[in-house]
Amino acid sequence: MKTSAARTQPTRHRPAALPAPHVWTFDGPFETCLAELEDTLRRAIVGIGDVSRIALQIDLSLPALRTRVAAGDALQPAWRDFLARLAAYGLPAAPQLRRLRTPGPLATLVLAYRK
Image: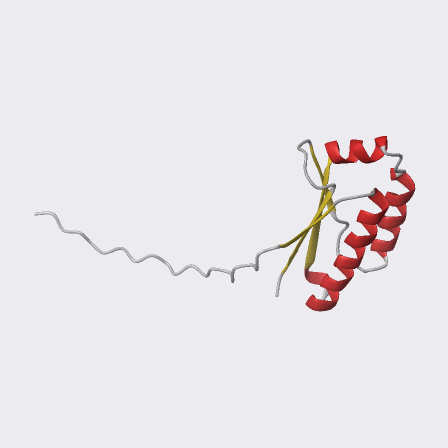
């Protein structure tokens, strides 16, 4: 005769689910995209209220970037100035930059945070 003993599983503490990240896309001239991205980030920080719990990722579409360079956009001064302005926000870490080889909007801002 088989007996089956009920096994008790330890109760696992599940952390509260993180809210879904906020995602915005930007297209057009490179410098304009960066200015709009910064403005959006600033407004999100005001809404969240605490920069210490924010993680950022910026996706750049390389095909879209190539198109902007062909149109005469200067990348380096705009990017350097953008990063310098972001440093003033007191973010816990610099944004992660992901270079996409697929066509799409020039820039995508992904913002995740913990409540």
